[in-house]
Image (cartoon, rainbow, N blue to C red; front, side):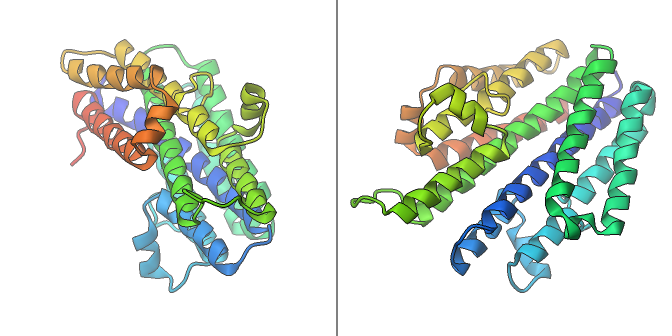
Amino acid sequence: MLSRTADSLFWMCRYTERAENTARMLDVNLQMSLLPQDAQTREGSWLGVLRISELQGLYQQKYASISPHDVLQYMVRDPENPSSIFSCMRAARENARAVRGSLTTEVWETYNTTWLELLKHLHTGLLERNPGEFFEWVKFRSHLARGVTTGTMLQDEALYFLRIGMHLERADNTARMLDVKFHEREGNGQEGRSEPAGAAALQSEFYRWSALLSSVSGLEIYRKVYRDVITPDRVAELLILHGDMPRSLLATMRAVADDLARVSNQRSTETERRAGMLCAELQYGRVEDILASGLHQYLDHFLDRINDLGNRISQDFLVPLS
């Protein structure tokens, strides 16, 4: 397969996954903002949305303050924001158009229709009128694209590069969300508290972790796996080490390692080795050890390794990043 073709397939799926992840994050944050909370907590939660995507600095160059309306506009509509839903869906459609000959008709029509419907929804004000419905639409179109791709495309290199892009983006997003949410917890003084938390604080904790799980479709899975109250340690274990959880770090890295082996070439030995090592560490890791060594440091190191893998995949298979 030509490197340029593989590159477009890889980024087509990665941008679609990023748009879905952004919609999930904004939807849950919007729902959480409806709960009783002080102004500082509300502003901190919307600031967390920007921190997850590393967009705090760019946002503050355009807006004087952090408000739900401005963050939503920036993360959904802004064409200058490379991680906005608009920019991601535009990039996904353009990459699909560039490799239209490598896609089935159903896949191309799904991506093209998604882009046209997005323009219509933004023009008619669906985001402002019913943001929940808009975010559900974004998630549905991502699910549809994934299902059509799996159900209609030949299981060859094209499909493998699509899946590598999707799972790399998913791993990156899960790690970022965990890191930011645990930082919020530390900032709110939950770490090392010597006195029992009050009822209001416990309720806030419950909703915070429920929201994190909901953002990765993990709340029902958590209840099936643990059948107990939600605790931060178990949330971390589920989203990092549980291989049956589709958006966990282990599940995504296992998929990346498997698909890298399928597209292996003479230059990719080191990339495969690093992906395999990361997968093995997750497979045999223990959450107690991760928390003891510091979750932030662990996730920060994981994100560095994910970024390194992405760069190495570009060097080995795709159009190298400039």
